[in-house]
Image 1: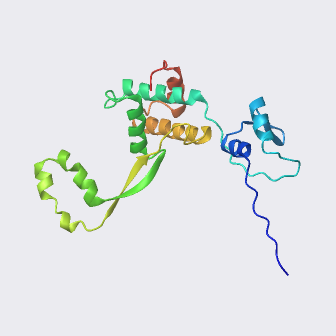
Image 2 (image 1 turned 135 degrees about the vertical axis):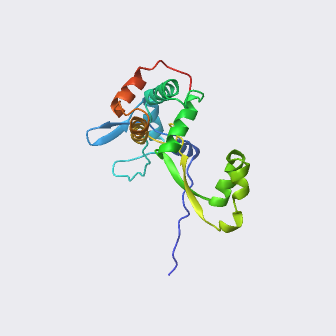
Length: 194
């Protein structure tokens, strides 16, 4: 008996374009529906029928207000906490992330490499006393701040990180304020250039 194999069908050009294009969907009770006429047209190119299985990756777009409030938060910190006054809004956020570990990847680096990077700021007395041969292959844990851009995370993760940074600032720098008060004050800051 000979088995006949049907070669896989190649998608037509419009199918390739539809697959590459994000489709906006709006949530209704029990379903997702196309958000715009363009989204309806893109879906039509797939030639979907009732009962077809579709695999999708969902992503919630970030609300632009979050970035404005985050930069207001950074501006509030740079104007009111000693040691932050010379930093840009971006630098303030990255420093707070690194200090707190909030919104960071935990990485391990060689102790030898970490100390070598610090040598210029240690001073000659300390630098000359370090014996790199005795260090072996020990690792040091460090925090590497994640990007907070809209392309890398949704609103929920962004808000969790912002809440964590506000808690950290309240605990470390402003114990007289609650995290909610800090966030509220940050929301009132005038818009600044990130």
